[in-house]
Image (cartoon, one colour):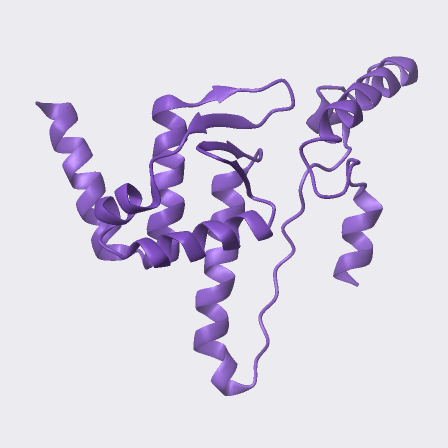
Length: 171
């Protein structure tokens, strides 16, 4: 009973507090949490519901869901192949940053204020590939090579990003 109450409360807050983009992202996260399996490259894969089923679940139209999913795919946050969906690592945080950036730009745009966000993918740092600053250089190099091999199929650019990539984007 308490699980059903929590689920209903979650759905009510989603419908009341999030716009359509946020609701689509939330449903994707919920499906991944309920049915997903982690792949070797860190992505989470699951079978997605039809666009109409998602639309019915969040109170919108099928066309809107299709647009939102294409936008999430264009941003590199999800990869959709038929009925299979693969979420990139950090999908929830990236979707939230993207959503917040959109909302803030709508509010501040009329005042002439531009809003931008940097939301990188996999960045080659020891914490990402499971290395450590106190590990040997050879061990960290081996782990980085393994990470890069896995990322070839998981990212738009077939390589891991570097900290310098982010620094140059911000400047």
